[in-house]
Length: 323
Image 1 (cartoon, rainbow, N blue to C red):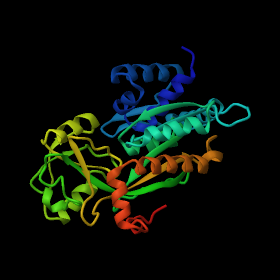
Image 2 (cartoon, helix red, strand yellow):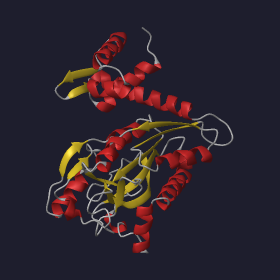
Image 3 (cartoon, one colour):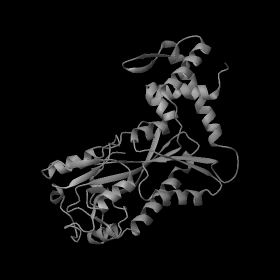
């Protein structure tokens, strides 16, 4: 067997994730298949690269030597693949994110900004995984979020810019007794069944639990899921309520409402590596994301009404002090 680029990516994935199981999931192969591939690579190189145990896959001393050079080699290769000399900018943008409701507008604007650029998209709820993929050069750009009390801590290799700060709203069935209210008091939802997503690893739904506790209750997360369509169906049929982004679209069955006194907030962030081929375009990309977000918010009746009633600086600005 001759050592190939794909073998280096396998080693890097196992190193990044610290586990053959997690690396296999990220690479889209089974754990036994990945184990056999790593063993063949180790046989080719003549010594173990990882030791396996309860702590996962840890580099051996030889593995540390190999992985340092693997990372350097992949960095050079990825920079070659991400850039080719030509007028007009980037060859491709590998974009990843938690996919907020307005991300379609962002992708449209990326295509307008660089019409000859090939854009690939990776949807991922786990924000830590998105950050690691940018650090590991598997993504060029990532759209993530953080929350009051759960702020993003950046590694020095990453550049980050705030795209938007917005309140978190709630969605209820159009027939719900509170659906006609201008605002909904979070305390009035104490007895409801909730759709609560699995943790994104950054602070949601932990921020929701924090604020519900302040309001005197623990949300009954009867439905634990992240699928947007099923969440909408559960709300539309009156089975549950859910916290949602302000740009979440209401319809004849689902009503989106702001919360009284705005207890819940989120911040959208754009990340990229400072040394990537994308870096010279960073601020232009941030402005593109901001424009897409603003357009989506203008099209949201719930958010537009909320802004008119506040008529000034967003009160959430003072909740975020990092970056």
